[in-house]
Length: 455
Image (cartoon, rainbow, N blue to C red; front, top):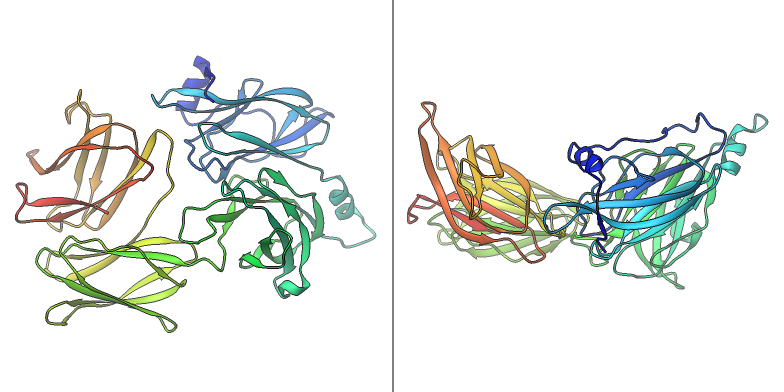
């Protein structure tokens, strides 16, 4: 729960993008008594967040991202997690006291709903692993591994691992991992592996990764977190080491989702999407129509677009690649020579507390360099806080908007400074749990000669 406002110095630092750091990413430290800390944000609907220990803040961390490892003095520390409230103010969303013992390692994971978040302190030790790797009488190359489960489906799993040259029958159990818990650490050879999740207490595999590279002598933390992709399980696995960027490994079992937008003003279309293993056919998509999502296996596909009436091919062999768990939309439109073309965009379906991801694609070949203004009641285009700039034809731009009511004004500015209003929307209320994706296309029946279509 939000419980207090951030101090003024920290607020100014946070808005600048980074707070004052403490410690080092190295195991070498100036004091003999240090612990090592890291932070990962797994709260599925969170804003960007910041970890602070005893008023020492670190860099902002978005969902499914982490900060690197730092050293910190031992003892009891006051831990705060900062985020944003409904007014855009920076506040403490979670407060805790943590005990940091000498040479202990901590991965602090923020999880649960952002409005009532929880903290999982994953504690592990590198002592045995480092001792083995430093043994001059043996050529060991060991790494450490633990698995944490913070996916809000709250499903309990058994985790297994095998070399990527082995099968599930040869896999080693890493442990049982319930929601909000983590397995005991295990020391394994550095190598390339496959990770499996089964329903707890069974050998029924529900999640298989591709090849996971665990080839560095370090501590790896496998985090089971929420996924907003096409897979039925709605979880995915991130591998967190001591760096800032986790590596994601989607389930091989997960499908992909695709839908189609027809941006042709006067033509109904059919669409064929096919690979060597699979084909799907969508018929009679009306002008400015958006289909439902359709499930596909991961693969590379060729897309053919036909006139629904004459069956004449309008466009052939658009390449559309779909990886596991991806959600994409195929956009059909005309270029400046009235040739039919297609492009593929990836969708972001993650809900966010108090804010929304707004995406806009320009499919009007008449205009490059458009400015898009998001105008609230008390604003004009000269005073708006939120805008997109230099939106070119066949380009997609995104920004994050706070929950509010907006009028969208799209403006073209000529070289001589003359401004033309390309489109002006009614008031759009950003609310609910979804993000907003819009497509700008020509429309001769519109007052402005253009329209915005919500996907």
